[in-house]
Image (cartoon, rainbow, N blue to C red; front, side, top):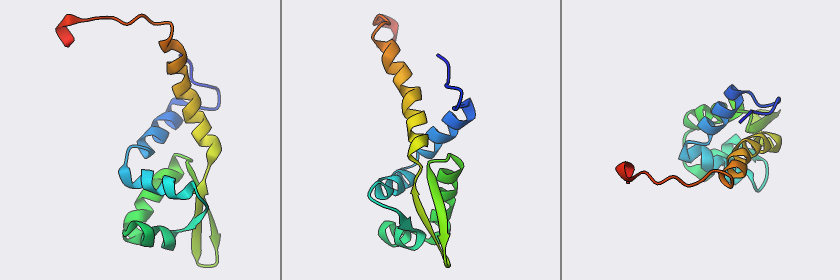
Length: 109
């Protein structure tokens, strides 16, 4: 299976790493509705800004969220094209799963 020309292995790995934490998943779920200020995210999630900043940095490095500054606040939103990259990567497994036979291995039940 080949990774698309826009998706390097590092992009795929950082994307799935970012998705591997429950708090980061909650942030993404909240951002599905609309853009949110970091202060609103802290209030909704009940976490400190320093803890949330660490997780937002991970999401930004994976290019899953975008940020913009307005005054003293930073607002976050989803970067939907990056989710498409991860979805396309996973779709390759679904496409090949229909061709591959199911193998029974009694030693590994």
